[in-house]
Length: 184
Image (cartoon, rainbow, N blue to C red; front, side, top):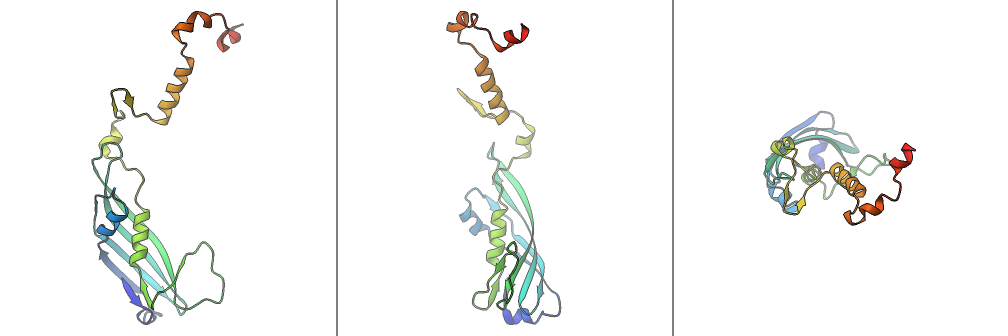
């Protein structure tokens, strides 16, 4: 997915479309060891070329195989990315919008490979759950430990606050609680 500036200028007055399949599995696995498998990545799109810049309208699709965050089972995670990437063919005499990312051309060649790699890498989720793990509401536990949600942890801490040490139970009867004050 490389084009020279001269090749792009040929499409200045007509639409340039492309549909390529690339394999970035090894590069992505090196970048994130959690990735177990990556399908071939399909990159479709069109390029709008004018005398100063070229804008690539990209549609990137594929599938990751990642470990489930609870069970470590393989989970298929599809991705579907839409992006517009702009390259300057000539220096501009005016300011560009700060939200618009402009890429520079190196050596007279526009290379979409690194941009596709970066966009796909950004799509990797922090957590992914298998359908079985999502259905099962029980979390893993073992001897003297258990995994809790934040709500469960909050409830456990509240119960712990209300508990009275059995050694001090008789002493606690001497001091009024908030509930006793409300009843008076």
